[in-house]
Amino acid sequence: VNRFHWDQGCVYCVQFSMEPCFTKPNFSQGAKLDAKADLSEAAKARGIDFFLVAFVDLRGVLRTKMVPASAIKQIQRDGAGFAPAATWLDFGPHAADLLVIPDASTLLQVPFSPELAIVMGDCFIEGKEVAQSPRAVLKAQVAEAKKRGYVFKSGVEAEFFLLSDKDAISDSRDTQSKPCYDAQSMMRRYALLADIVKTLNASGFGVYQTDHEDANGQFEINWHYQDCLTTADQHVFFKWAVKTLSERHGFRATFMPRPFSNLSGNGCHIHCSLWAGDKNVFEASDTISDLALQFLGGVLAKAPSYCAITNPTVNSFKRLNGAATASGYTWSPNRVSWSGNNRSHMVRVPDNDRFELRLADGAVNPYLLPAVMLACGFWGIDTKANPHKCLFPADVNMYEIPDGSPKLEGIASLPRNLLDATRALESDEHLTALLGADFLRAFVKLQKLEWTEFTAHLSNWEVSQTLDC
Image 1 (cartoon, helix red, strand yellow):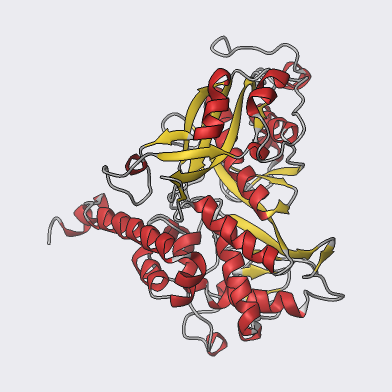
Image 2 (image 1 turned 60 degrees about the vertical axis):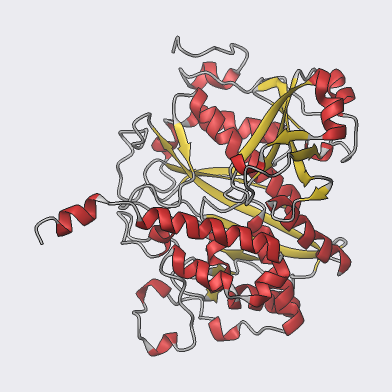
């Protein structure tokens, strides 16, 4: 306990735990700013000493520069400079500076370190916006939605594991074969989870539930849906806050798709709805609307192509195509199908106002996930895509249908590995046009690089299987 700094003002910590709470109990987040608001004035009014000016690269890595409040006016005007080749963007060492211009509307003062604030930015090189920047890709899709008179709203469910310093599950008593919703396992991590939730709620997230998930050491925190750009910015802050607070509590949080071969992996389900003003145009009386069905038709039809985006790592396919888990189910899809309130399919329709894509995993880029949903959804509307060939009755367990069954006639399978997924994405002319050729070229190049690095790696399995050949 002595290695932590105690905040004696936190009632939860004193009453329920011997661990500290880092979120300040009397913290109040300031009002949301306009995109061009003066950040130096906000710093004076809110007691901010430093800003983390941030962007996310193609592999979803959060990149930041720490800027003192005394310099933020200049940075807001000129941008924070980064060497683009030092990040996962497709530039060489000869490229000019990548300048990140803060978007003041994303400013979040950090509830556990109120002297610090984080602000997302947009990327420019020599005055031109970087088209391969994931936030730029999403903003282009948001602009297309606005042109059509719509706002796309999304909510994400990002699962994560809590590990020890040795990358094992941090709770040695969390050993049940079906640990989902286990109260005692949650209470042993109550101090950390409460700290995270209070930080998120102090930042305007509207968290409404937290639970222990299907795997040992795995948790999920759900917050209220927003317009997709806001949700994507929140998703970035969420992952950063979870990792940072976990470290302060002595743990390591990971969103890796499948860190343990015998346990369920980390999904990142996205709930989707489309709005025209105050009206949810996906909502209908009994099930989702005809427009929503066309949108869904596009999402289903293009799934094999965009799987490299929603499942962007070699490890992603251990979650999609891996062995059975200790709990009995992987909870991840294996084919392109949908149903009602049924979690064995790629898409679930839990109510008459939205659908849930269950394909994406914890490695997905927070901006590219909603971007690809919008791109494919509008393609589905434009082509009047019909999702019904992929529809199964609500009582059908997709995991029980074997390969080759007549029930699977016309049902596409998901790619088996990252290379197959990347090739499917690269060959899809529609997605190239919809997401932008510059972005797709850069993204595919990085995916092929990861596959090459993977195939060059000699695994213990290969040695054990082949050493005595």
